[in-house]
Amino acid sequence: MLFNIKLVGGARKRSKYTGRIKAEGWVEVINGPYRKKFRNHFVDSALFALGYILGSNWTASVASAVYAPLNPQTMYVGSDTSTKTAATMTALAAPIGSAPGTAPNSVSTSIVTQTGQSSFTLSAVWNASTVTGSLGEMALYGTALTAALTGSQGSQSTSQVMLSRLSAADGDFSAFAINSAYALQINWTITFTFS
Image (tube, rainbow, N blue to C red; front, side, top):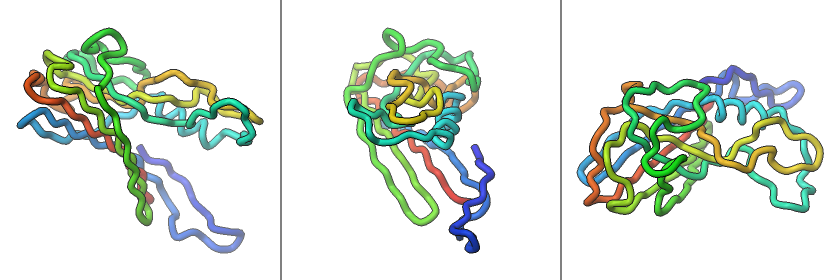
């Protein structure tokens, strides 16, 4: 995903970063001896939320809780191996457990910033035997804006939406049987880079 923008640092001075902002994601899956890394696919919910963030105009004087405009929060896994990822997808095709899927036992986040780059990683862990069967799809979920904000208001959406999905059907990875003797860990990293 590329954003063609120009960043100008003042009326006469051009910023060091002129050109494009590149957004990409990487997903690392660990299940006992199985350890692989794959490239991510964003879906419409993530792209639209970024646009709504840029188009919003609101104040922070909200008495109730204010929800982050784009907040990856959890992941779910599924068994489907035939449904390719479409930009309009909103859920896994065949989640493991009741929809939207079996929640991980623990979730943690980390943010790393350096000049010209910012990365966000969400790590989810399902303890041994929490999810079983074949893993053919996985998705990143979180809260996201569903419309631009104006005035003094909180997020337009407080429910979770699917932001990104990987699948065996897309050729992102080969479906594999989850080894229930080990925990299943997924580290989902989204990186924004000036290019």
